[in-house]
Length: 333
Ligand code: TRP
Image (cartoon, rainbow, N blue to C red; front, side):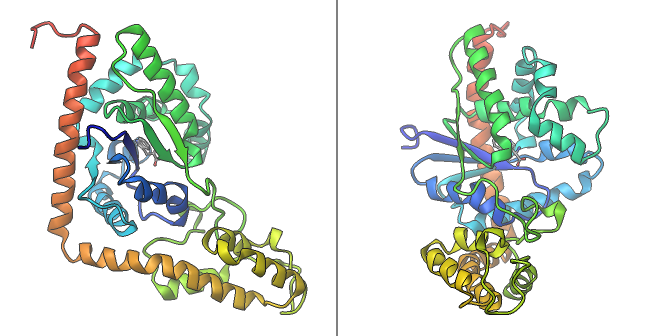
């Protein structure tokens, strides 16, 4: 059955709870496409270690945190395969083979690597960090994924992945698939500060786990039009953070809201309450699903175990083909 479907591979580093930026950037697409595609979701714990190698003690908890986020967001474990990167050693093997013909300079010029290196204050990058896009290419290629739904920051990695796969196929034998990228409807959701992209480390995020009280207070604190002092001052939605969220989470009413804001006939408090309701409607079913799974953690372990087992079998099949293509098969096994 799944043989006929095209395959999706995507995933995240387990570094904490997912937020609305992840949801609209990539997670919503995974949930939407999981029936149409054979979906694999990687919990990239080894990749998390490329920046947090001294914090290995948080990994187990973070793996469960992100697994619950996926399940809460609507990833259906009956049809999607959720698995753990480190438990598939074949990924290390393919990473090594890809690294043989990947240029260090190309990696150094990757804009996402550059901005992450400066964000983490890396002066002298480790080999593992510099090379994580190669490992990410192995994540995608080993599953012969056709499509990779990701956030905008991953585009350079996907360009590299396509090049590496093409090169491998040219050098040896065309056994791997060049993946396409799918960026979500909102590639860059602004944070509550209205300045930067929503991100956990900038403390400007609404998490999928936020309860109604927290959600309400975060929305209340978001920056609106600074020129609007009284309720009936005319507003400027183009400079308002709440307006950007209304566009994403309340598209049906956006024209009306903008018109009312410009005329000063809807105040910021009412507008924020309206947005709160919209986002709360989105998060409520997630809270219910999360509770269901959080109350049955052995089931979550089983989902990860079975998913990893299934993913490993696929990876092993591809590695047979890869070794054969490279003529690394000395004992004819
Ligand atoms: N780099 C992704 C992130 O930062 C995680 C990731 C690892 C990934 N392997 C992948 C994404 C393969 C898509 C495909 O979240």
